[in-house]
Image 1 (cartoon, rainbow, N blue to C red):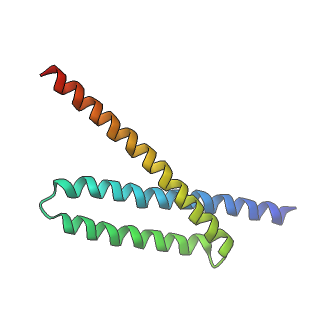
Image 2: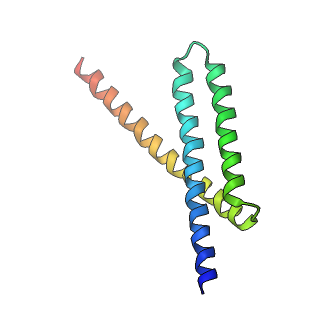
Image 3: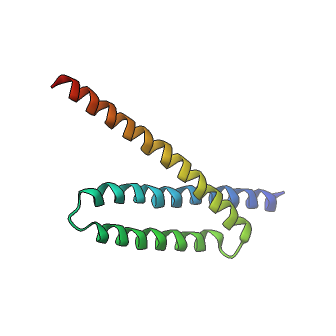
Length: 108
């Protein structure tokens, strides 16, 4: 009973770790795009961010899975879920900014 519970807890932690890694990866991508559009050297932002995000993600997958393919699979599922969460979050931010710009445009 205890071993099964430990395995379940580790799988839940792997899923949460995947969500955290995905949030860092996709949130970092969103941040990079925002910064690189206004930057004088966008290539540095894009390449630097890409390498940093990929390194963090790969190291995170390695340590979370710890050689167990089931944990890696659950972690990747959490990573995918984080993509959906970040997409929804950033879309709502963009919609709010567009609405604000429309309201400001109507006032002038």
